[in-house]
View 1 (cartoon, rainbow, N blue to C red):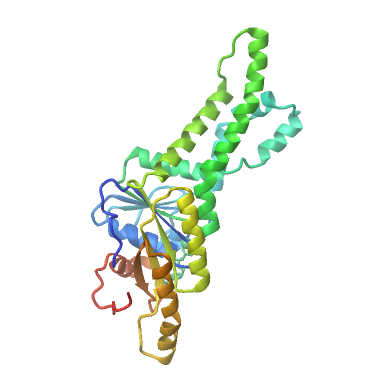
View 2 (cartoon, rainbow, N blue to C red):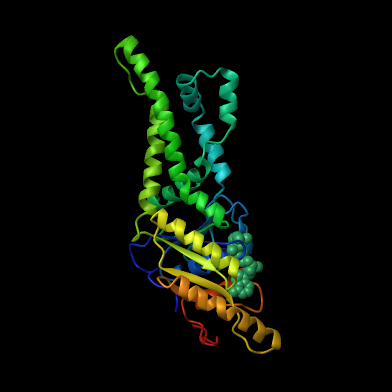
Length: 321
Ligand SMILES: Nc1ncnc2c1ncn2[C@@H]1O[C@H](COP(=O)(O)OP(=O)(O)OP(=O)(O)O)[C@@H](O)[C@H]1O
Ligand SMILES: [Mg+2]
């Protein structure tokens, strides 16, 4: 069974996630290479480890880079930390005003607050970078590679966390607003209010995109091992909580060869986990990806993986179902 539905015109964003080391980056980049055959595609890494550079054997970094030897494919590695530092630099005056007018903090307290992170904001800023790219509409498909589960969940829950913070900040502002109104008779929104409102809009845009099953799909990547399966269960539960759509799962590193005693033993050991995946995740289509003899690195190897994901690899033994 290949990946399905990704060519649907409305589907804009495909997010890959899963346990550490299961093949998220390889599958995300291979999928992007497949989509780039028909669509102008951008592959985005939100992983602080920035592994799409390694996967593609090309330095990418925090800027749009055409991928060498793949027409129609561009890549970027987003840094949550940099996105947050840029936000702080751009909105320093508004943040100081917010803390200054809403609390009893002195200058030292405010400096301390400024050096702390606002919960969820760095990830929201990563997401904002993605949403801005999507809204610029220069690409037809956006493929997102995430860091292992915990980080991906932080990314997905960041709008909720930041929304809580905005509500709390807005509440503090109401007191300030009330005081100004009582003394001077009127209150006009200042730059701190405008910043809060814009943050609120960003959070909303992210939530709307993530919750739109026609525009956004999450593809969990798993391997036939117990711990990876348990982590996938938790991941899927969270995705359901966040109302993020997921209708297929990649089961990677499946041993297909019978050539040696070692291969046969590995294959037998994987069997029960493959059955377990089909059983536990029976509402999802399972896309089987074999264990390759070599690591998947560079465009040529990624194209072979792409052929498996899009079911165009004829020589492989496809008996594992
Ligand atoms: N089907 C496969 N056969 C052989 N090697 C594979 C396969 N899938 C992935 N690999 C290799 O496994 C390693 C981990 O893959 P990858 O970096 O894609 O995983 P990841 O889930 O993104 O890891 P991380 O959690 O560190 O981001 C890489 O060296 C990759 O080449
Ligand atoms: Mg990775």
